Image (cartoon, rainbow, N blue to C red; front, side, top):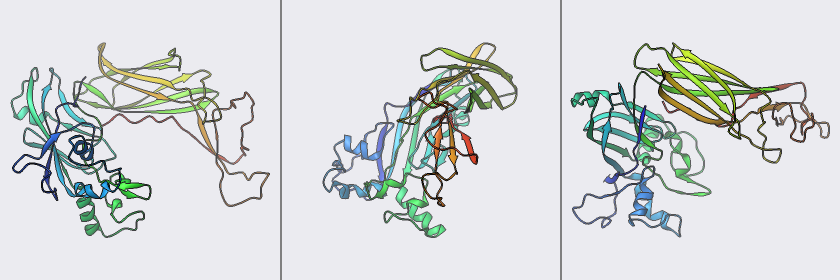
Length: 364
């Protein structure tokens, strides 16, 4: 797989909305250099066109941005390198976006909180692109006003109860605090707020990798894998676990014929992850490599922690029983001091859910 991150050369254009008179010279294109990842506010601030909204009453002077439609443009080279698939992968778009490549729409988004993948083959093939050559293209991402969209959604669906400010933040899948909060200003952003890239690949890729970690004396990792394929090919997945010192502590290999599979690894006597104040937070690295006939196709790597979390419903002896529920956490079966007892009273009525340390899914 070839990954080409798109960071340099972006341009931001203010397309439509209550743009202040005199912000740009008359007849100009209303375009400034853009930083990706970033937002409209930070690009306009870098260009010297707005004042810092966190100072004095400057917040009031930038409210027009939340009602303005904007566009991000990039001229780029797309290198297919002979691969079967070429995708545009956007880890985060904020929020109401329409994407076009060489004038052809390739997708629309309505959710700031997820990633997106767009297959570019139809556009590239329509332009007679040789899969062995790199060609120039033009990528545009138009962002409509999120505030206008939210208000239209509220009118269409009906008002829903909300607290905190006067804007319908609950009518759109976007960061709620952008619409104002008791601790923050109203700054309704738009833009490419997370990395964006081109991926060229063949045979198969790791569409999703989800580690489920449990501890019962030994540590166990169940690595749930989902594949996307270009055809019916058997592929191999090799998984390796290294401890906080970088030492290899577990390996596994499996042949995958289906689009899903699970690889299980056992780690003897793992160093346990403890909440702050109760012990250390050691992290292990898990790496999965997808291959066929010895050629690497894709790779995934994340850090995990070995721990368990328990909800203790037993009333404490030092206080009268109450309807409230108390929570206690424990890591494996060992206390950080070496004692077999945990800091909280863990009774027999216990619902235990194994938890892995934060491990975001591979964008799909």
